[in-house]
Image (cartoon, rainbow, N blue to C red; front, side, top):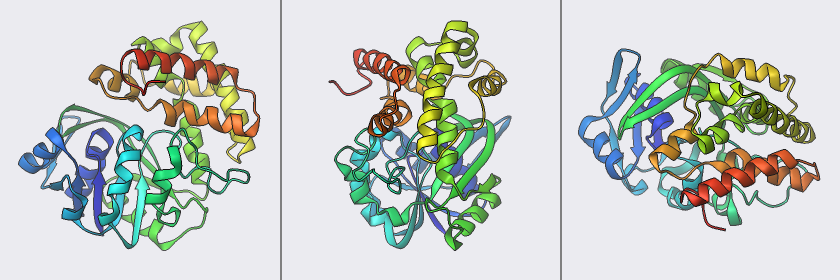
Amino acid sequence: MKVCIVGAGAIGGFLGTRLAASGATVTALARGDTLQALRGQGWRLQSGDRMVTAPAIASEHAADLGPQDLVVLAVKAPALTGLAPTLGPLLGEATAVMPAMNGVPWWFCDEIPGFGSPLESVDPGGSIGRAIDRSRIVGCVVHASASTSRPGVAHHRFGRELIVGEPTGTRTERVRSIAELLVRAGFEVAVSENIRQAIWYKLWGNMTVNPISAMTGATGDRVIGDPLVRDFCSAVMEEAARVGREIGCAISQTPEDRHAVTAKLGAFRPSMLQDVEAGRWIELDALVGAVHEIAGRLGVEAPNIAALLGLVRLFAREKGLYPAA
């Protein structure tokens, strides 16, 4: 199976290095310093005390890499709108596209009654949906912590769980093949018949601590360690759970259940905080804006989600890390 990693940052580097080291045929669509690092030194992943390496074939032009069996999208959500229309040369007749990204993906509401138009928060104008046909999509949830210290070097902190599945819920041969490929690369893989629910569950646990950490500079333990902030996180999560019930993505846990899980992670630096510190645009719309938009379309009252979105959006605009009004 020919695999192309689009975006060889933290998660892309984590996935790409392990796949390449397992013997899979892996290329990368990258640019700038990351492209030069891949060309000069190959795939590199620091995992504990071990540096995993593998040769890399990389280009900034999709046409140089040609049609693939699987395209893994591991870019930050704000970059995908401009990038998606350039991916055509990677897409053969049967190419699967697997977004391994944070938050609500652009295709998430395609099968939900009443959502006749794309989510503007994650696919403004529908350009991503036009570039990548929904029949190609294989859903993916990544439960792992990774970061980058410098271009071309990913650091894996913990977690190797991947959940994959068809948006339709059917078990197909392509999902089975992708799961087997990932297992051979050392991942713990589950095939889900309700990948949308798995996506929503991760979002539900990620949409508060991540942006609040970005805005305050506090690590995850300090966010949930403050009683007032913890209560605000719980209120946001309760609203998101109500939205989830309306779209077939019910959450069985309570916010306190999730806070207990987060507490076990200690003083971790969420991905959005890492983006702020690096001066990168933040993934606010995929994590919060899309939930706010879905709630609005369904008529679900969500004042705490709106407050979170407004505060973090204003913070990010002042820092130049989110589009101007």
